[in-house]
Image (cartoon, rainbow, N blue to C red):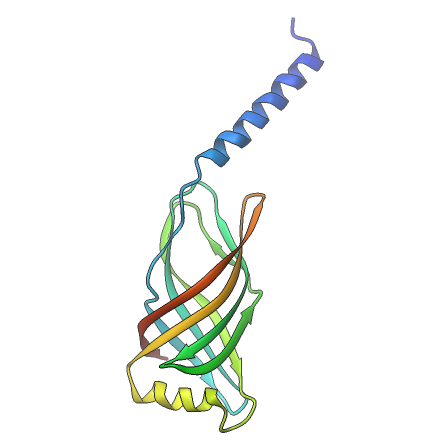
Length: 158
């Protein structure tokens, strides 16, 4: 007959073993090239858009982007800073395009962001540079990753 204290110890050991074996089977998340920028709204006060990014998560657990803070440049013109605390969930065993919401507030009508926006509408493709950091969370682990990417992307008007 197994005593309840022995059963409890066996359960605790099994739980710890399961936890470590789940962590050891982590596979890197694949982030593809930005597929485009979807323009939501432009007003005198701000520019709202989404950056379309393919993300493949081969792991058996979901991953969350909890915060990001990025400085953006368009065609070598500073567009502004985007910061978001909107939680974006990357489902387990998924391969899909995710929309990263962004908003840039204009400080003045003739700001560098306004000049960059004029260039955006003249072209269907732009060179987008993003530099900053993202906070991600997977299971019990939270990490901050540095972002420094430059890419040519297509503009998608709604």
